[in-house]
Picture 1: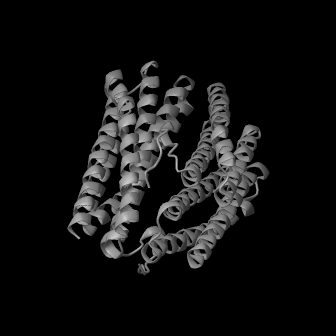
Picture 2: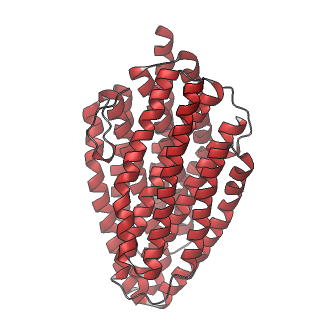
Picture 3: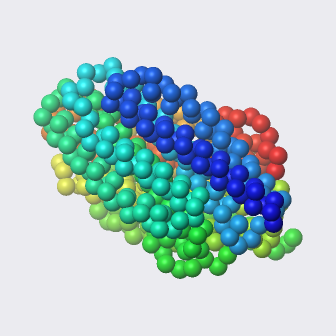
Length: 222
Length: 222
């Protein structure tokens, strides 16, 4: 099935391109915050339409492949995984837009101190996004497991940021608004990491046929 | 294709059952908060495993249908929509668990005043979940549009809750922690509404073949 192989390659390339845009969105929304640079935030807002169109195109290609090629076994798993990954990426894009909007809102406020740990968290999360798509394209189960293992570090870092910000608010009434904005940015980064984790689980399902969601260990029958 | 019709009916029933559990999860997590009742929160935590297992089963049934029945056109759209709805429902279940955990954490704190608008928001969101699944099962495009139209009310209500809680914190240092917990509960309810909206869009895609995501208006080619 040479034809199907080419179509699947096209699907992979499109998902990779989409994830590149999403990753850039996460980077620029956090840089907008750190450097108080509205241009980087606006770039993220500008790219939203492109990401949305990519999602629609990928969904259509995948659905057409299901209809026309009638794939089974691994190819079928690959296509349904591609549809899921597509959804995850689009949600990550929305989260980047949300962070860019909060970065813009924070620029109007006098930030009492730089949001030290948020760039750190953002780096970790961007790396998860990159690795999880690499794992998908290369069918690399080991790399997918690295992504799953990173999730605890993300949660720990987010907790540390929350605790710091709550203490900060409890000491100083005037920083409530900005602290809440920063908490939601940390929360959004954690949600991006959750989406990356979902993709890693889809990758393991494609590569090994094992459904690792909810730590189930049984083998798929498809 | 009598056989496929029966399988699709089974798929619909399972999604309906799953959404009933999810809806109950939202209800009980908020009631746990309002009535300071740990039992209702624990019920939500207990049901998580069941919802997760339902998700795995539905995904397997849908994938098998794609592989074995080689559906096209409307049936294909229905099955891929069922897979998406399945994911949305499971995410809603996670959000209910998250709210139940925050309700438990809030029980240890002396709540300064009842979270007046959160039950109101929860009612609205539960109604969206119920309507969107009804719309799917009955292939009712009008009902799906009602769900889409409710999303603005949810956002407005969530904004009002945020503003109230921020003012609250700015006036009184000792309520920061509980206010943050309440904000995250409001945020989770809004996210549940977003998932309901996603399902409504999937329903419109199944019923009318129109992709309404991102307000695109073009017709699908599948």
